[in-house]
View 1: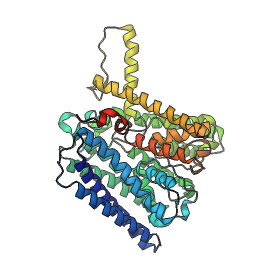
View 2 (view 1 turned 135 degrees about the vertical axis):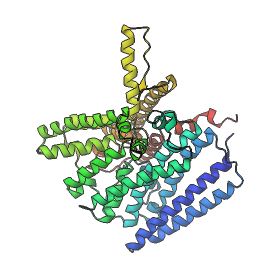
View 3 (view 1 turned 180 degrees about the horizontal axis):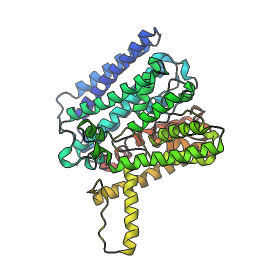
View 4 (view 1 turned 120 degrees about the horizontal axis):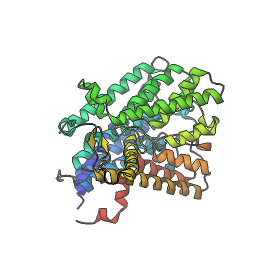
Length: 482
């Protein structure tokens, strides 16, 4: 049976935390003397009152969380944060329609980065900071859930590759969640501060902090309508490219680095294929851009590297309109939207580890055709992957593609073009950001029908929580009393 009292208590605490985050944005508005200060204070007070009521409803709750409670809390956390997070947009009038405000908020907390805003520079500093902060919080929250929370419940088998294949049984991060959370937080904060300091070379302090939030969380929100292209800075593109790559790495590997176990971290199978993929695709992009555009060699490499890392890490930053390139290149971008980076990171999409498992399973299938009786285990980092985890990888990919197909069809039924439907659904489910066609990097998603925005918001949530955590709530079995 679901322990609703503890769920009320946890969601209440989350609402109180969001109230504090809203107050920080009120502080930014105070510094810049903006009228939206009062709106942030109103929403912060409302969030605090709601949080207090929920905590009271959870008084004397049992501290024990079941697997069902865990799934429900994780899903409700993102919905609650997004629902409260839309209020500053709505109350201030900068996004007057609820569907648009919720879409923007969900896009932020799921680190998707798609936007309906057509004049981002017109937003006050407090609201711009809120957009970037929602992504930073969403990115840290997801990493924390994947590495620290799910293992406690013994759920989310594929997410557990962060601790089961990169760390041996005797080298788990830490048995206490509080310690693990602090270590994750230190790494996340260190990367954020480092990038913000480096970006100060060609950005203002405010812009550097906001873009640092969006980069480390692999979110992609910018303070400028034309995104990174606004700055027209090779330095910024190279620095952000580097930190997008770093943010796409399994965060558990950073623990090895902090302990001086560099060789062990570098031998990680997923890290190897993640980096190899970036190198190979960047080379292809660089040569293709040099051959088909007016860009010189350095520009071709820079634009190729930037967009390959941006899409593969599902960050979604853009420094050019890739829809003006040859169809071959934006078709490759469409494919990369499905791949993603490493498990145990803030990135979305299918993830490299699942593709590695499927690749090794396919290889073994061919070998069995020659040697039917051979015992061919699938190994990751010299550890055999259990049949259940292999099945989980297969099922995940099948369900992922099925949801994408349903979403693609749904968008077309609503009157959205074929290419735009493909791009928006792939981008939302993979938490990437920009789409294709008239929903590409040169456009916003404001012209989409309201039904489409609600559907894409749901896909963002499903993709962010690795599909099963959300879909399970729609099954009758989940709600049965047993």
